[in-house]
Length: 285
Length: 246
Image (tube, each protein chain N blue to C red):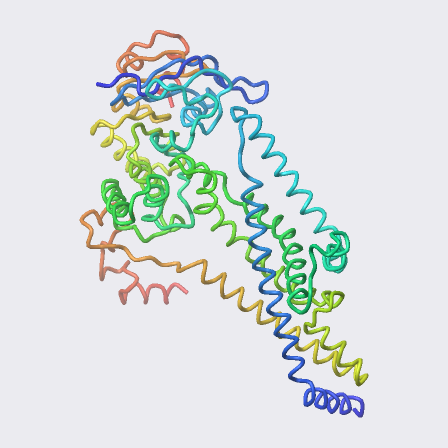
């Protein structure tokens, strides 16, 4: 019991002195995670569209070669960035690029750190999203593509108007996954000096050694963020699914065509609203 | 009447080593209503899909107003916008309402304004009796209704030829009538139609020409009276006999 009481007082102390720092950390984490997830989605969508450009034997050999090359490049991108740790990618981009280009590309100051962090997390998310988008596109009935082609849509028109809206709806859970992973995994950006929520914790405990109380704050903070993200995404899904009901435009003269009918026997024993019917149902049970 | 809007010459199509279409020749004049009949697997649908370039022919030519569209460097989307297609499985866009389904092609492909597109879409939806359902989504309407919307969507593009790929095969029996009725009306109005169908009554009563396909070749073709009344080939007789008995 003593230990619990001490923990609570320590947390109180930390909060009193450092709540501002914690909030700045949360803010940085959120901005980075949201921006990088959005950018990653865009990269993923782009890869998805480029990856599925169809070609036939009738196309020019140069076009076929170019499309095959494009698919190979996207494949390499996905495999490399999905298959290596983000913390190492950060090191290679933040320290490696300036070194190998003799400073032609350099990330200087706070703006540099932000740019590098955004770049790394976006590219990393993009690699995962490219695969998710591919899955989303595969999951759509090929008939949808044929329907779009049959009215003369080009590949890009088909993708933008028909396939992507449906694929995107199907991969929202996956986007949610990536967003939540990004909220937590942006913590590895400490290697390039990016101060987000977890780096804040490292800085604070470095001064006062209240390691465990600060970790409790971190736990609660991260869980709150991810729960909020979960609820938000669920809400978005429901909103995208739309209403199950629709209005008949009944002033139309052809409204009495197949599918619409009014109950033929109002007030008869078989009308669900009649007393007889309700009694009958009650009696039946 | 304009001759040879579409002319198919020596068309062949293989899937791997399996030759589905063998050296097909036929032509479509303006106002023709051609029914393509034949057993399952005889290549009817493949032929129709080749005409719309949804399948790439292995060899041969498809001439649209005398220009080969099956060759290299052809703008397939442009060609398809003149040739409407109605599918067995409807293929309505699930992310759009009935009205949007009929508008999107006009706006994106024909570059019409929203108002123009809406007007045309409403006109054709009214024609197929689906105007009350403009706000419904495809998942909320029945198969027959979906198919009528699909026909309106194709019509809204103002196509020169309309292709039907077994439009009633996926429907419950009581919904077949409403779709055939719409098609019959179109035929009477002079629409040029190419219909792959198992509805022998439709082929007999509505079409101006019947094509019987068997094992990847056109076995026999002629007027409905010739094919149904006095078939020349033994295969045609056997095929029709099977339908009469069932």
